[in-house]
Length: 184
Image (cartoon, rainbow, N blue to C red):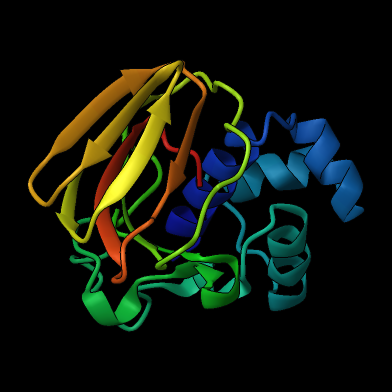
């Protein structure tokens, strides 16, 4: 389990543009200790994980997904019951991480956009390539300056562009999203 947790910490730290020194300092730990954790050579305590989760803006349960599964499955398969949920119904966007690990070159996310929900202003362009397919519902997206109306089965792909979304429909819009490199 320690190696899996360490990989997640490293991936989360990098996607938040934090150095080892910044995260270690914020956690009150040494750079050497954090490096050992990220490489799977040291197992952090639950208290340390709580603090790292808080600093990386994830729930501590994120680090324990699939921990009760067979060791040979961990990092290969993420069972539906073990998916970490990000967001809430109140925000209009609930996401589930579908990827068994964050150490690969991409991640998969299931995004559910509530009826009437909107991202507001376009999100800043990020150094990622994004793509997805609308599974159900309807969704309007703005990718750069282009407005697109998506129906079930429609897919999209873009790189390094600002984007926004809105669900004008009466039912949730469900998108399977792929992001490279991982952002969670």
